[in-house]
Length: 313
Image (cartoon, one colour):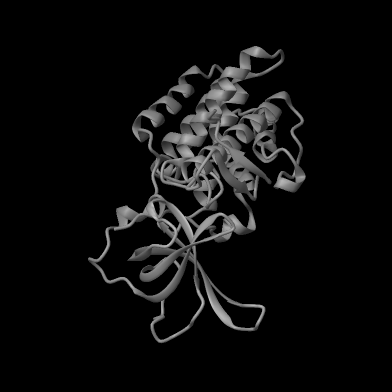
């Protein structure tokens, strides 16, 4: 099998890939073509079907397909011009080759994240974290292996755990360095800030937005989870619940990025900065990892709106 990160311009490739998206579009000349996104465990690549011949058999999104294509470069990115497609047959592929996974040890990361619960002094917050991470039917089973995003950052198995641990560690580092920070609120909010993604995104191989993901989003889903769990803990302070929910719904930091509220507490602001730091730094890392360009420049990143340079000299 030729993995996506091994493809070079000018090569011909015949192989099996997971079709993550399929769009039927029209060119400026009015000709119908297909725009696809294909995935394996090393990444994702754009593919185009310019000629809709009999060699393009019926297939759908989230199906494994066999393609015959040529590798080209478009706007500094690798792209596939596909000549033939058919559905892959059972036994022709190994699903493990198509699920990207963290390079880090999942069990070690999980144990390290869970160890933070023992450091929480507030009994209500500790009970809340234990109820969500140890007893919730979805969180307790899926948190280790879920992705943190569909495509932007940490979009692989174990990505949610890796991102959450990084954000929690950054918040733990920041907590004693500033006055007025309630460490328990900050650490709990860091651990919970993306827990709603377990419901926002489906499991692999789909890793796509669910109905609740589209209609509510993980900020609202996470806030509701805090509310529902706190209601089952006798005597849980209402103000504490509101402070935790505020961190949840404001951690994107800006209205334009989906936060219904701006961070208005010091814990919410630190959480936003930690989340933004880890997410965008990971984008840099993944851009450099996937770089196929010669020289020090990895190329232009649309989301970051800048060219990315490797720190080599």
